[in-house]
Length: 281
Image 1 (cartoon, rainbow, N blue to C red):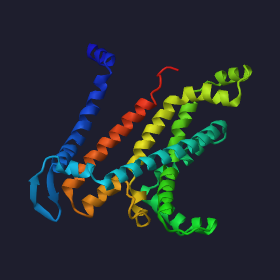
Image 2: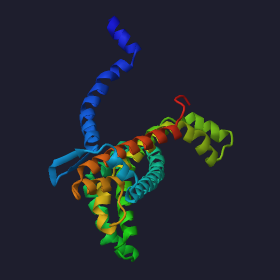
Image 3: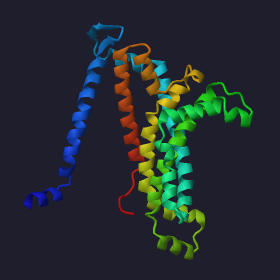
């Protein structure tokens, strides 16, 4: 009994098994990637490997293609997350007002997230390049703009549902009595949104932003399928794929994978610091 009480007083003890399992699962692949990135290794000549230190990292970081890919990735993430948050906020506000069959509607908005990402990417690519897009809006279905639009639309459509559920949980934190008091005090709709709703739902908004940003950052299927329209514009994960499995440069690809992981960590930490909110509102 004393041991249980001691564990409950130190909640980090409850997290220790999960942390240890996570380290066991990730330590070996990550260590292997770091070691491979410090050598010259290619699938075409597997026996011809030599230690080169940080030369692979220097080559990547001094490459214009790498920084163009990073910039395109960050732009892709920003546009996708902003659109998802706007659409999800509208859907969440609507679902909160619906009382009839609301549970079924919440499951329905999650259907796009349950569909395989490659299926979503195929559907939007074909729809915007040779399907309903050119037919309805009378434009040419070729070009880099259409390819970027197809990749972004696929990711937005896939992630808006789960973002809606997260924001809906945040809206549930807003007390109805507080809104009624704001109305009684003469607060306008804009004031109620910015002074009552957003502060109460801020933790959920932060979670949704960080989660969807990291998920969009690693998006691979949609940019890969749109690549024929984007021969010169590749995201960082797609450039990593091209280096490893098209050029067969394992050492250079491993260096890119480590840098992609480091950049993802920077994006996540940066968003957490930028969106930090008080735990008690």
